[in-house]
Image (cartoon, rainbow, N blue to C red; front, top):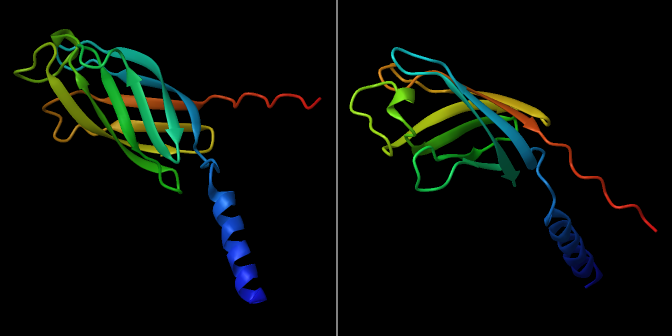
Length: 151
């Protein structure tokens, strides 16, 4: 009986300790995306914040459903590697590379990334390079707010 009680107590303690425990990458990240000029398309840089919770990254730039919107999503593995997905709506044909692209058109691509506890980098997968242009992502983790002083 005592062994069963201790086993149950141990399991409850372990379960309670796991709740709310932050993953190594959890927090708010400053995200900078820089896309090089290619062909007739202009280069550009976008800055926005991304949030990581339970090692799942989500970032947004712009207003959902409007041209220029970008969402960045994906899971960061324990080793820091991540295959993120960027999806959004074309802002202007001045910034696109490839035929048959118009303002407001949907797009999506993968971003192969790697994170440490405080920084990360990633590059857009350009496939054969016919569509899209090279984009580089830089991530910097914001410092956690200081805990309130104890009275």
